[in-house]
Amino acid sequence: MPLAASAITGLVLAGGQGQRMGGRDKGLIELNGRLLVDYVIERLKPQVATLIVCANRNQMAYQALGFPVIHDSLPDYPGPLAGILAGLDHCTTRWLATAPCDCPFLPTDFVAKLAAVATTEDTIAVASAQGELQPVFALIPRALRDALERFLQTGERKITRWYAQYRMVPVEFDAADAFDNLNTEADRARALNRLSHGQP
Image (tube, rainbow, N blue to C red; front, side, top):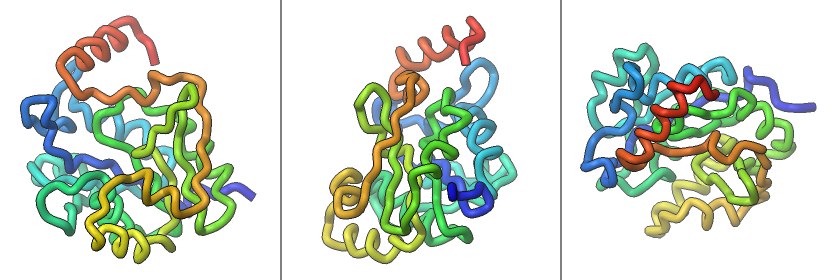
């Protein structure tokens, strides 16, 4: 039986340094008159029971969006796994669905498709598009929280290396551009053009 949305917390990862965007906080960059993080929240919120945001900067700006805001428990921006660990620490459901703050075209069936394969609590379901894994778009059981902390304490940071220790199940999505991240101004321009043409 597939997981119900009531068993899943959504986590928006907004804790990065935005280095390729000149150090700007990507979630707070405007796209067509709205914050980038607003697009992600709008798409992820209906798919989960509750939503939290992990942000290491500008926390008051994120709090103004109306959702709990947390931050990495590890210093020096160690990457998305640190945000995921913080999410698992604050997760009140059995599963955590993760998505970055800079993916305005997140599929509206993202969580449902991952939940359909999450049959055991050592399964990590990960989005894939055209055969390419999208590792920060995942559904992770809260039961793996302590294992993730131990992994990070060894100094490891690579997300796919941690996933590989468990039953990682890629879930294929048809539209590769659904997972487009806005890492540069050129990416932002392409997204703006897509929105102006009414593309989902």
